[in-house]
Amino acid sequence: MGFMHSGTTDPLLDEFTRVLLELRWGDMDAYGHVNNVTQLRLLEEARVRALGSPTHSSDAANTPGRYGVSETVSGVEIPKIFADASSTTELLVASHAIEYRAPIPYRTGPIAVDLVISEVGPASVTAGYVICEPDGSQAYTVAETVIVFIDTAKGRPRRLTQEETAAMESVAGRAVPLRRSRR
Image (tube, rainbow, N blue to C red; front, side):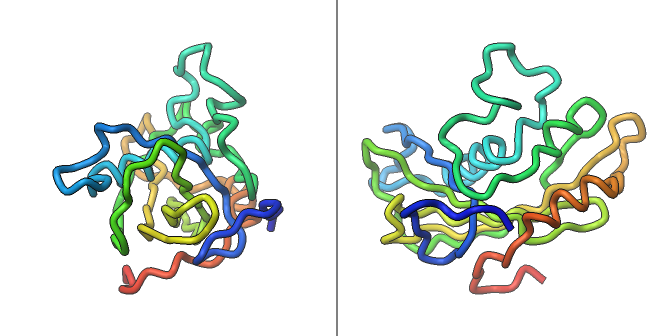
């Protein structure tokens, strides 16, 4: 299914794509930990870096890396079908499921967001995440996002092509261990 990180672990996943993100002081809430809404934004940023920018066709020319993917991404290489489809397809979030398992304290170093493709549907892809310490010692948040492919000309969901489906299925793995099933 891809390659593993050398010496990198996740407390809940076996194979994954890792995105390291820096926290900002403003990410904290009045209780001294990373705000729950900010955690959804961290998932969004990790998703865009790992899967490619959904606005790739109109992104600024100085965006780092291929398809705007930062060099902070490692692990299982996920095909960049999101960036490749960006000129004719909108990628919209259909749903989120998120479980906050422990508060994330502020730090000056990065937090890890580990991502897996856990389901490939006819017109959607499900991404699972674990926000954790980079050394794998603590999982803070477990989440899933269902992303639907929308044909921009028709304004309706579109089926993934055979090539897109095969590419995503080639890296699909086990779903993240949510305590409550999303179904």
